[in-house]
Image (cartoon, rainbow, N blue to C red; front, side, top):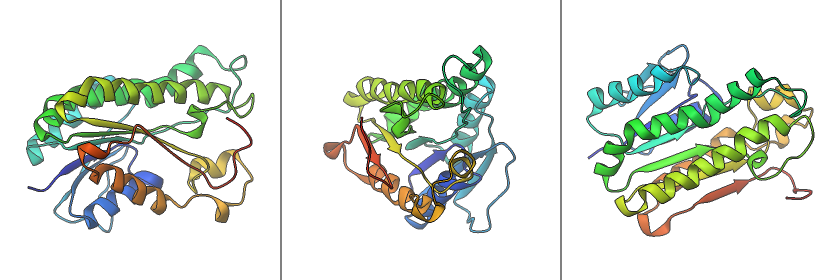
Amino acid sequence: MTRVAMISGASRGIGAALGRRLVQDGWAVSLGMRQPVLPDWATDAVHVQAHDASDPASDAAWVRAVADRFGRIDAVVANAGVMTPKSVIEASDDDIRAMMDVHVMSPRRLAQAAWPLLRASGRGRVVILASLSGKRVKSAKAGSYSLSKFAAVALAHGLRHEGFADGIRATAVCPGFVATDMARSITDFPVDRMTDPQDLARIIALLLDLPNEASVAEFAVNCQLEESF
Protein backbone atom coordinates (compact mmCIF):
# COMPACT_ATOMS: atom_id res chain seq x y z
CA MET A 1 0.00 0.00 0.00
CA THR A 2 1.34 3.44 -0.95
CA ARG A 3 2.16 5.56 2.06
CA VAL A 4 0.73 9.09 2.24
CA ALA A 5 2.44 12.19 3.63
CA MET A 6 1.10 15.66 4.32
CA ILE A 7 3.63 18.50 3.98
CA SER A 8 2.81 22.05 5.02
CA GLY A 9 4.58 25.07 3.56
CA ALA A 10 5.13 23.04 0.40
CA SER A 11 5.08 25.73 -2.28
CA ARG A 12 8.85 26.22 -2.20
CA GLY A 13 12.04 25.57 -0.26
CA ILE A 14 12.21 22.58 2.06
CA GLY A 15 8.57 21.59 1.62
CA ALA A 16 8.74 21.51 -2.17
CA ALA A 17 12.03 19.60 -2.14
CA LEU A 18 10.61 17.05 0.29
CA GLY A 19 7.43 16.56 -1.71
CA ARG A 20 9.41 15.83 -4.84
CA ARG A 21 11.75 13.48 -3.00
CA LEU A 22 8.93 11.48 -1.43
CA VAL A 23 7.15 11.05 -4.75
CA GLN A 24 10.40 9.75 -6.22
CA ASP A 25 10.56 7.32 -3.29
CA GLY A 26 7.07 5.99 -4.00
CA TRP A 27 4.97 8.02 -1.58
CA ALA A 28 1.76 9.87 -2.33
CA VAL A 29 1.87 13.42 -1.01
CA SER A 30 -0.53 16.19 -0.16
CA LEU A 31 1.10 19.60 -0.43
CA GLY A 32 -0.33 22.32 1.79
CA MET A 33 0.05 25.79 0.30
CA ARG A 34 -1.46 29.21 0.79
CA GLN A 35 -2.03 29.37 -2.96
CA PRO A 36 -2.27 25.76 -4.17
CA VAL A 37 -0.64 25.12 -7.53
CA LEU A 38 0.43 21.73 -8.85
CA PRO A 39 4.21 21.67 -9.30
CA ASP A 40 5.62 20.80 -12.71
CA TRP A 41 6.91 17.47 -11.35
CA ALA A 42 3.50 16.39 -10.05
CA THR A 43 2.10 12.93 -10.79
CA ASP A 44 -1.24 11.32 -9.95
CA ALA A 45 0.23 10.72 -6.50
CA VAL A 46 0.31 14.47 -5.76
CA HIS A 47 -2.56 16.37 -4.15
CA VAL A 48 -2.50 20.09 -3.39
CA GLN A 49 -4.60 21.81 -0.77
CA ALA A 50 -5.14 25.40 0.30
CA HIS A 51 -3.70 25.58 3.80
CA ASP A 52 -3.13 28.59 6.02
CA ALA A 53 -1.26 27.67 9.19
CA SER A 54 -2.61 30.79 10.89
CA ASP A 55 -6.23 29.70 10.35
CA PRO A 56 -7.40 27.07 12.88
CA ALA A 57 -10.14 25.78 10.55
CA SER A 58 -7.63 25.13 7.79
CA ASP A 59 -5.86 22.26 9.55
CA ALA A 60 -8.80 19.92 10.09
CA ALA A 61 -10.16 20.72 6.63
CA TRP A 62 -6.88 19.67 5.06
CA VAL A 63 -6.78 16.39 6.98
CA ARG A 64 -10.34 15.61 5.86
CA ALA A 65 -9.42 16.34 2.23
CA VAL A 66 -6.42 14.00 2.39
CA ALA A 67 -8.46 11.25 4.02
CA ASP A 68 -11.11 11.60 1.30
CA ARG A 69 -8.49 11.53 -1.47
CA PHE A 70 -6.18 8.76 -0.28
CA GLY A 71 -8.01 6.98 2.55
CA ARG A 72 -4.97 7.03 4.83
CA ILE A 73 -2.30 9.27 6.35
CA ASP A 74 1.09 7.87 7.29
CA ALA A 75 3.09 11.04 7.92
CA VAL A 76 2.56 14.67 8.81
CA VAL A 77 5.45 17.04 8.13
CA ALA A 78 4.90 20.46 9.69
CA ASN A 79 7.21 22.64 7.63
CA ALA A 80 5.41 26.00 7.34
CA GLY A 81 7.38 28.80 8.95
CA VAL A 82 7.48 32.54 9.55
CA MET A 83 10.22 34.74 10.97
CA THR A 84 9.98 38.07 12.77
CA PRO A 85 13.53 39.16 13.68
CA LYS A 86 12.77 40.93 16.95
CA SER A 87 13.96 40.48 20.49
CA VAL A 88 11.55 39.30 23.15
CA ILE A 89 11.32 42.91 24.33
CA GLU A 90 10.80 44.49 20.89
CA ALA A 91 8.20 41.96 19.73
CA SER A 92 4.53 42.62 20.24
CA ASP A 93 2.07 40.04 21.48
CA ASP A 94 0.82 39.75 17.90
CA ASP A 95 4.35 39.07 16.62
CA ILE A 96 4.82 36.27 19.13
CA ARG A 97 1.34 34.91 18.55
CA ALA A 98 1.84 34.76 14.78
CA MET A 99 4.98 32.62 15.12
CA MET A 100 3.44 30.40 17.78
CA ASP A 101 0.37 29.86 15.60
CA VAL A 102 2.44 28.69 12.62
CA HIS A 103 5.22 26.80 14.43
CA VAL A 104 3.27 25.20 17.29
CA MET A 105 -0.51 25.50 17.21
CA SER A 106 -1.05 24.51 13.58
CA PRO A 107 1.30 21.49 13.76
CA ARG A 108 -0.44 20.37 16.95
CA ARG A 109 -3.86 20.66 15.29
CA LEU A 110 -2.67 18.79 12.19
CA ALA A 111 -1.29 15.96 14.29
CA GLN A 112 -4.43 15.90 16.43
CA ALA A 113 -6.75 15.71 13.42
CA ALA A 114 -4.62 13.06 11.68
CA TRP A 115 -4.01 11.03 14.86
CA PRO A 116 -6.56 8.24 14.25
CA LEU A 117 -5.14 7.60 10.78
CA LEU A 118 -1.54 7.85 11.98
CA ARG A 119 -2.38 5.27 14.64
CA ALA A 120 -4.09 3.02 12.08
CA SER A 121 -0.93 3.10 9.97
CA GLY A 122 1.02 1.24 12.65
CA ARG A 123 4.06 3.32 11.76
CA GLY A 124 2.72 6.86 11.70
CA ARG A 125 5.28 9.63 11.53
CA VAL A 126 5.23 13.28 12.58
CA VAL A 127 8.13 15.54 11.67
CA ILE A 128 8.23 19.03 13.14
CA LEU A 129 10.56 21.36 11.24
CA ALA A 130 11.99 23.15 14.22
CA SER A 131 15.38 24.84 14.02
CA LEU A 132 18.71 25.11 15.78
CA SER A 133 16.99 28.22 17.14
CA GLY A 134 14.90 25.71 19.07
CA LYS A 135 18.10 24.52 20.79
CA ARG A 136 19.80 27.83 21.62
CA VAL A 137 19.17 31.58 21.41
CA LYS A 138 21.88 32.85 19.10
CA SER A 139 21.19 36.58 19.36
CA ALA A 140 18.74 39.08 20.81
CA LYS A 141 17.03 39.50 17.42
CA ALA A 142 16.49 35.74 17.23
CA GLY A 143 14.86 35.62 20.65
CA SER A 144 11.21 35.73 19.62
CA TYR A 145 11.73 33.19 16.84
CA SER A 146 13.59 30.92 19.27
CA LEU A 147 10.70 31.17 21.71
CA SER A 148 8.39 29.55 19.17
CA LYS A 149 10.95 27.02 17.97
CA PHE A 150 11.76 25.83 21.51
CA ALA A 151 8.04 25.19 21.83
CA ALA A 152 8.05 23.34 18.50
CA VAL A 153 10.78 21.00 19.76
CA ALA A 154 8.75 20.38 22.93
CA LEU A 155 5.70 19.64 20.79
CA ALA A 156 7.62 16.95 18.91
CA HIS A 157 8.63 15.33 22.20
CA GLY A 158 5.07 15.52 23.52
CA LEU A 159 3.73 13.83 20.37
CA ARG A 160 6.47 11.22 20.63
CA HIS A 161 5.41 10.27 24.14
CA GLU A 162 1.71 10.27 23.29
CA GLY A 163 2.00 8.07 20.22
CA PHE A 164 4.90 5.74 20.96
CA ALA A 165 2.83 2.75 22.11
CA ASP A 166 0.73 3.04 18.93
CA GLY A 167 3.70 3.01 16.57
CA ILE A 168 3.70 6.77 16.00
CA ARG A 169 7.16 8.29 15.96
CA ALA A 170 7.76 12.04 16.15
CA THR A 171 10.99 13.83 15.31
CA ALA A 172 12.09 17.45 15.70
CA VAL A 173 14.34 18.30 12.76
CA CYS A 174 16.56 21.22 13.71
CA PRO A 175 18.48 22.80 10.82
CA GLY A 176 20.68 25.86 10.79
CA PHE A 177 20.73 28.05 7.69
CA VAL A 178 19.00 26.35 4.74
CA ALA A 179 19.17 27.96 1.30
CA THR A 180 15.59 29.24 1.26
CA ASP A 181 13.99 32.63 0.77
CA MET A 182 13.53 32.97 4.53
CA ALA A 183 17.20 32.44 5.28
CA ARG A 184 18.28 34.81 2.52
CA SER A 185 16.10 37.52 4.01
CA ILE A 186 17.68 37.44 7.47
CA THR A 187 21.41 36.89 6.91
CA ASP A 188 24.29 37.73 4.63
CA PHE A 189 25.77 34.25 5.14
CA PRO A 190 26.71 32.96 1.66
CA VAL A 191 23.86 30.99 0.10
CA ASP A 192 26.23 28.52 -1.52
CA ARG A 193 27.45 27.55 1.97
CA MET A 194 23.96 26.97 3.39
CA THR A 195 22.38 23.52 3.59
CA ASP A 196 20.65 22.65 0.32
CA PRO A 197 16.88 22.00 0.75
CA GLN A 198 17.31 18.81 -1.27
CA ASP A 199 19.81 17.50 1.27
CA LEU A 200 17.40 18.26 4.10
CA ALA A 201 14.69 16.47 2.10
CA ARG A 202 16.93 13.39 1.90
CA ILE A 203 17.35 13.45 5.67
CA ILE A 204 13.62 13.77 6.34
CA ALA A 205 12.82 11.01 3.84
CA LEU A 206 15.23 8.74 5.72
CA LEU A 207 13.63 9.59 9.07
CA LEU A 208 10.18 8.81 7.68
CA ASP A 209 11.40 5.49 6.33
CA LEU A 210 13.14 4.21 9.46
CA PRO A 211 11.41 1.35 11.27
CA ASN A 212 9.74 1.86 14.63
CA GLU A 213 12.77 0.26 16.26
CA ALA A 214 15.12 2.98 14.95
CA SER A 215 13.31 6.03 16.25
CA VAL A 216 15.01 9.46 16.22
CA ALA A 217 13.74 12.09 18.67
CA GLU A 218 15.78 15.03 17.34
CA PHE A 219 17.97 15.54 14.30
CA ALA A 220 20.24 18.58 14.17
CA VAL A 221 21.97 19.56 10.91
CA ASN A 222 24.07 22.62 10.24
CA CYS A 223 26.17 24.20 7.52
CA GLN A 224 28.66 25.72 9.96
CA LEU A 225 30.33 24.93 13.26
CA GLU A 226 28.17 25.93 16.20
CA GLU A 227 29.70 28.50 18.54
CA SER A 228 27.74 27.15 21.50
CA PHE A 229 24.54 25.47 22.59
